[in-house]
Image (cartoon, rainbow, N blue to C red; front, side):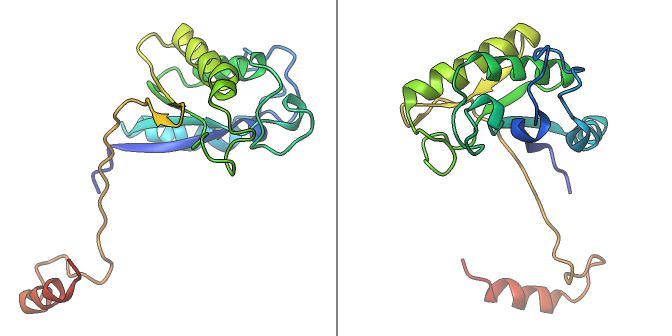
Length: 178
């Protein structure tokens, strides 16, 4: 299909269900990368660019709240970003959180807290590990992320692949909304 890039989310709350002893070390026993490693390694093996998004605070890092709540300090997220960058050093495009300007994705929805507890610590951590990385986020409810072009394609399962009926294809195209 010619897929060139895939956006994939690392759910911090699922990877680190308990607090790591050495949180910057991806080999810490508290980290369980097994749910993501096969997918990411396969994408890498097929030379498909990965845009890796970090999302979801574990309850041990936010006072027992749901995953869409900010961590109580910046250190745990920065440490997780370091571990993730060490685990996937070939990833050069990173997104920090999903739509942090919307309350359903981040609570409290505060640009200042987002920048100080998530974006800045992750940016610094990832750049310490991967100098050429591009790290994107949202600040003050305006987009400040890098431009990442994603091209995707699809083939309709009922469309003839061998040239099929040209009249039928023309009729379907002319009936399609524009």
